[in-house]
Amino acid sequence: MATIIEYTDQKRPANHYPKQIISPLIPGPCCCSKMEQIGAEQHEEGWSFIYRRCKKCGFAVRHVTARDPQVFVKKGSRFDHRELVGFHG
Ligand SMILES: [Zn+2]
Image (cartoon, rainbow, N blue to C red; front, side):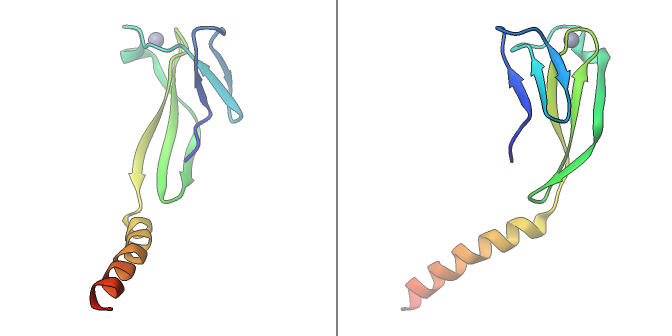
């Protein structure tokens, strides 16, 4: 799951959503109350998430809103199967 947020103190905070968000490394006290959602909810590899960004300092986070357990069951079962084959084989 790739992120579009670049955390750096070398560049000024910027919102180039959906391509990139430049965020400071550390959130400030303003970030508790000034966070706003950027764009629509994204879905990737069974995860649902939104980007949120502080209106004041530009600190950004990716906030996971949900994940689809089916994706993990499918990925996990492949390994389980291989282990079982080895165990019995
Ligand atoms: Zn802030």
